[in-house]
Image 1: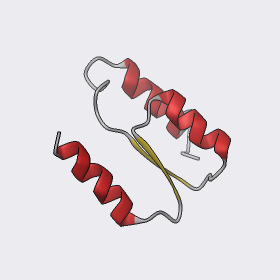
Image 2: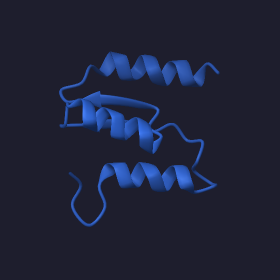
Image 3: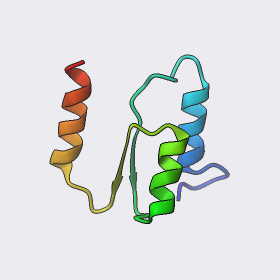
Image 4: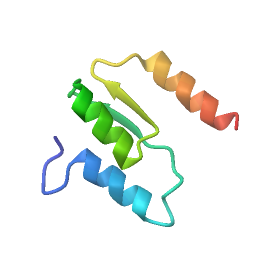
Length: 69
């Protein structure tokens, strides 16, 4: 639901396709809470998907897990 010609899934796909950003963690936080949106985020290469309203502690837990690697 980003303004303009590209949505968040497109941004995620472009980040994964770019050699400089392909390994960055991507956390999708979306107002869309349907299975199709979650599957689309996974197929675009998202690290995790959170639907709004999301639980900040769950996000922090995932970020902490990545920083522990």
